[in-house]
Image (cartoon, rainbow, N blue to C red; front, side):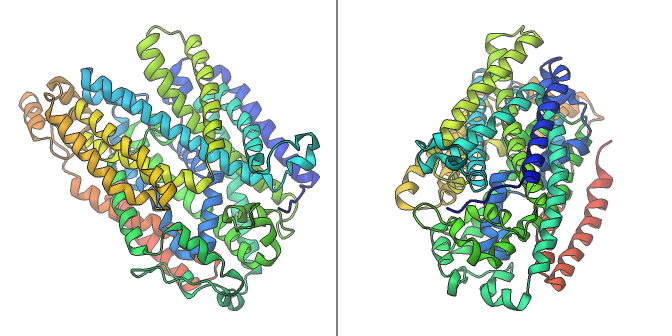
Length: 617
């Protein structure tokens, strides 16, 4: 692999930024240590737009950016659907109604919310433990995911064995892990010192850097893009977002090797893939946020209205800037392919598309200073995601295990010490996860395709069905998690996408939910009434509504189900257009850019009238 040494300017910018993070950690340490709520949720005093910037910044992670550049190079406009694996449009469901429902609970974590919904019976306690285990599993996986992407990214700029000859004993395969550990320590420092407050302030600084870098990279790509020559290289379907039953994309000439990657990804039957990610995405979005840093940001807002605004702002803040950068790097990667080919082949000589991003950054077309800015931003992106995820995992272990079961009267100082100790242990375990994982995509596919599948059934029913109880939740989650953990072992040998196990995992989970629910009595009526009155969900709540209405005739049920569904549909179109527009702009497809921009305007006007104007005060 070829390497590119950084200039003094680039190194100075990176050092300056790392110094800023350390300063933020020290500066906010006193505020964060006041009590557990200050540490985990910033005292619920942070404005929604700051949390929106922070949440968007946390999603601007280095591993995700590396992966998105890789799939954009290969799939072009069709790559806008592949991130639905997460699913990205869960932010729309949150924006329209779920963030407000969640924030009304006044809880600190998702596991604490389980007590709010199911009470304290045996089933609820089991559910509490299940959600903590799930949250920690997801958190560790996402920490490992960021860890791998970080190491692979920085390796190309900082050749370990050249800079530090005494490290020659480290096998080449594990060089990324050495860098991952090194930069993880910076993230751990400011996250453990300042908690949520320092994470938010560091995220805001990082987003400003990434926005500037993204716009400049897009401009550089457009200046070097010759439409006629570029169009002769890429398949015809590369420019279109439409697709048939099969993915009819055939790379030729010097790019013919790209077809091997399409085959190994398993996306040839693209309509089947699209249908699966859409179905899974809608169901996962209805289930609500997984217990990660996204949920913690929602619970950190000042009110249900601000929770909705925060989730809505993430799409506007994140998508256009991020996809200007991603498309810029993808275009430059294809233009410079002959020059960077040696840098993007792994030790076996096979093209590793996850190396396209660092290879392009190291090219002379990205000038000194800008290289340092991009690297500082992407390093910060890694640390932002790592710190936010770490904060969420700490919240579950300290708040929902240590304080709940072992130290109910813990002082702020004891809670702070517990957070630090737990954070260190979690980081060490996640590093072990990262060392064992193969690459970014393998972790991503497992988390989004399998593990999240186990979360869906139980978490849809908890919002929408009054009879669903703690035992149903526990059995539903457990019945989904067991196949989610075992089935990927088959894909290791059979090369099957974990996404395609989703129907099996969902079926097992639904059976567990129903069996568990009817094997135990309903949740205590007082708990159900309190949940229904505070959350005001729509769904199958008539028996509880009748009781509440008989006691309080002025109570009115939530009748906005139809409006919410319309807003979600418009929101998904709005979000997808915010992704497509910057891609078309960088590709100089100005007619299609105009169409996408027109759709953005129309859907924005619709959402202004049908969502924003109707938000609760």
